[in-house]
Image 1 (cartoon, rainbow, N blue to C red):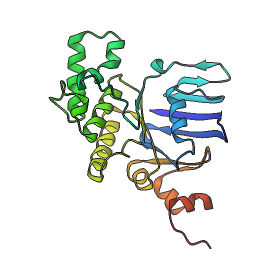
Image 2: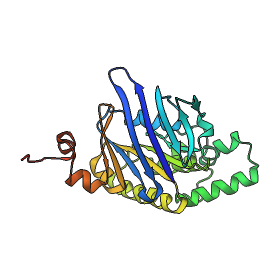
Image 3: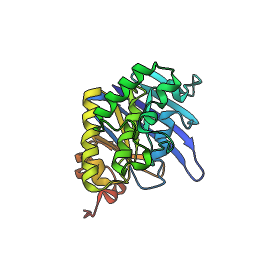
Length: 243
């Protein structure tokens, strides 16, 4: 599994210029940085929600976007699972209806759809919640429903936008372990956006540290912490002494 991202996009007050590539053996990629640095925009460009001005995005050898060749696949053709920060669940639907939404669009037979929903609820540890209303779910349960819905489309890549920001510490740990388990069992490419340094260090196998639209360093967590390539990286990672 591999993802290659090399894009530029002009924003209001800066230019987003991001370049990194990852392979499945490297595990989960974390995009870390302060609010407004371009993390979520990078995720939206990978998903196809936003369009870069130039560059290339390649997933497992398949070109999703290439400005030079004028290739720009639609969101539904990219095989992307997207977990939004606010979950974006439909409040008027049951758990089952939320999860099966993408399958409804593909007109998958009802029997197959119900079986798949059951499988996904087992994966996210919510068996028996099919008919539960979204308003009756806790924050952690809603996040699991959103994750199941993202997986329902059989994605090749899972994009997580601040996935644990609304959860307490225990739930954060549980969800982090679940994401890691899914990465290994389903062989998913996973890219996670976060502003939390500890979260990024714990969950990610590689981190792209961003500031003002640019990647300052793309490396293993321990190398970013112990061997920052610039003073800006060192400052972001914590209190430091300079020699």
